[in-house]
Image 1 (cartoon, rainbow, N blue to C red):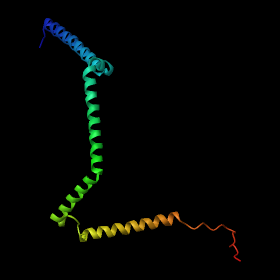
Image 2: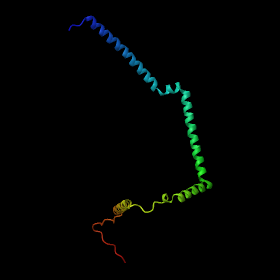
Image 3: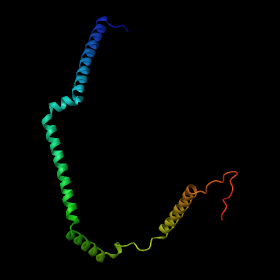
Image 4: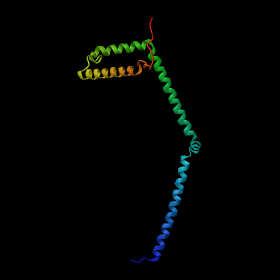
Amino acid sequence: MTENPKDTDKLQDEIAALRTDLGGAIEELDQRRKQLMDLPAQLKKHALPVAVAATVGVLALAGLTAFAIAQRRENQRPRAKIRRARKAAKRAIDHPERVAGGEPSLPMRLILSVLTAAAGAAARKIVERTVRPPPELPGATEPTRH
């Protein structure tokens, strides 16, 4: 299959033009990327929206903090404590089964006993390692007691 030299030249010219266009597009994208990632320039460009957003954020944080402080103060007052105690007593009277769990189940008792034994053994090992009698020195004699 023979190709026409004119067709080959035409294809090469099209490819070169596409490469040039593509190179220009890549350079333009790189320039835009640099502009977008330049934080100081972006802050200057969008100073008002950034300032408004920061102010709103600070005011919201200050408002939430003030609300939390007011709630804590309210909850520390005797009237609020009495109100909470009254609600707790009402819940206990309405649903006594929810107040205390009673006896733990057999699997829970087994788990607790194993954990207690393990904690005791670990504590014993720690005490044995940390509280050892001083080693006997060779040639040392027993102190005499009078």
